[in-house]
Length: 101
Image (tube, rainbow, N blue to C red; front, side, top):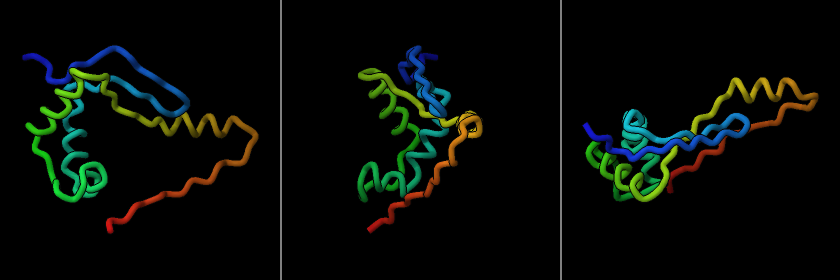
């Protein structure tokens, strides 16, 4: 069976973040994101509440033929080790959440 997503071999890493090539194995997480009304509200507006698997495959399959597509992964343990190795105060992080109007 032919792959839906046109993958590539580019991987970018800096500190705790890795951008890796998107593949057909990512459709489970892509469907989850594209089925979340809050995510869709901020990415698509208030007129779409959910995409089907076929919609998601069509969207990312098309985009991957026109551009490189990536999945961003955060490696928290790497970041924590990096912070622990420095003699600095640990930065303060706060969660910023947007509320729907």
